[in-house]
Length: 291
Ligand SMILES: Nc1ncnc2c1ncn2[C@@H]1O[C@H](COP(=O)(O)OP(=O)(O)OP(=O)(O)O)[C@@H](O)[C@H]1O
Image: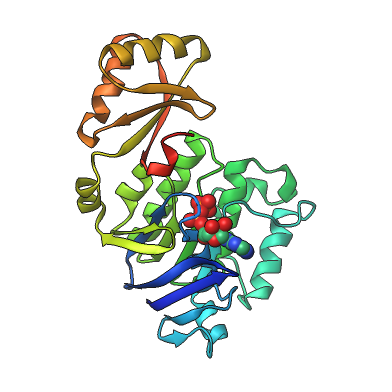
């Protein structure tokens, strides 16, 4: 479905993507993974045909330089945040996209599945974050393209909306869609991806199924835990008492853990009667350890 050979993208002196090659097969779900600035979004933008680049990209066998229109017809794109006209209604937005993609109808089943029907008359600007992202997914699915590209699609969602959205992606995968997405969240990578492309400073350093990747770099996980404000100090104390390095920053409590000990952290907090409201796991990149 996607062939990328020796893809290089420079911004002036900066090489944002450096001789990256990979393939994505039909029905596969592939996560682009890496620290901030690793080049994930730039790769997606190259696939979308938004940048000039060195190297070769084909989608569905179409070289995107010479057959861009045919290639783009095969894909839908879900951005991190929908930046569509806030004053337009959901219906008008859907109709606009359908015209743009020369698709005649928005299937009723799609509106039902994405639970958008009760919101059709609302203005896009009135929608909650979760609904906006579902609308973004609906727009990407207009014309029923076999390939979806998603850029951090759950980054701005709360836990519930994130779970809902991930559920939809699992359904799309089960229905045979090819998914290529960027995500910072380890659980999204581990549960949805068949393969993970790990990027570091624009270079592809690993291309493996998530379980193998986790084993390879398992000693370097960053766990972020979110508890009620009045529990923060106690949480850090009990974690220190158990020998964990835990610290607080604006993103919650940060704990660097060996992969196999992540459950111990949560159990420790549970035994201390501290409610864990949410947690996330990330690969711990060296440049993130001091933020
Ligand atoms: N339009 C641009 N002009 C100049 N430099 C850019 C541009 N877009 C990206 N970059 C740089 O290219 C590098 C890769 O950026 P990119 O957005 O692809 O990273 P990323 O892995 O998607 O990171 P993030 O998770 O923060 O979105 C970064 O150093 C970034 O500053």
